[in-house]
Image 1 (cartoon, rainbow, N blue to C red):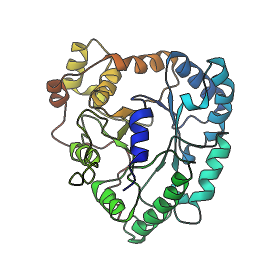
Image 2: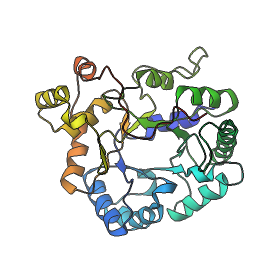
Image 3: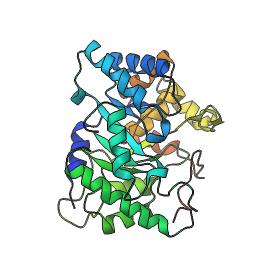
Image 4: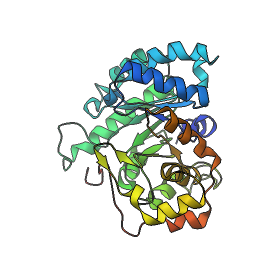
Length: 302
């Protein structure tokens, strides 16, 4: 399988980026990206269903010159709207994303969800639709409009199905990952796609090609991580905030994170997480014995 996209991610993708979920106002996007680029963020994550791609593109046209940056200095990610699955919709939707963001390529484009909008999660045709969508992304990757392609919210089962039919190795699987939902089996699988084939195993000191999101929940659905006594205690040990510790918990394992905030102080605190290294014992000690998921659950999608 083609691994060039995976190599591209290995050499270009930062360990921390700016999440933009639910930030739909242009003024807010501009303020967030201005502060983020000023302090050193170089990765921006969006999605077709966030409805802010155009705002991000417009903001970058103003901000890149301000900070003496070029397009190639920024790692841009977007994701396929679940309504745009299938052979007829993927290509036009990606072209629209490129137009929205005023760019001629994306660094990474992901299938956002393993099912299609309006389709039962138990419908077997979900698998066929995923295969069609991946095939279309492979074509866009081959002509350079997408430098790397990957998936989001995929389980090991979904990944197995993709690997059986695809010709391009997925570069990233963006999914929920935190001490209460530590999917270590999924992380290991992402590290070792087809590990029995020469050149397709991934060395232990390279990123696991996993991205973590929603570690702290959302304003409308807060999770219990902030109130976990073990996490509170160990965060104090590292003299950092609980959000900083949770981000560092992933980053130390080589897993990129995409914190979202509109607060300038928090944007800076999140970036400072790169200075924190969590030791192996503390990584293990905060892991919950009982899995608790705080975001969308893809495990039932056939």
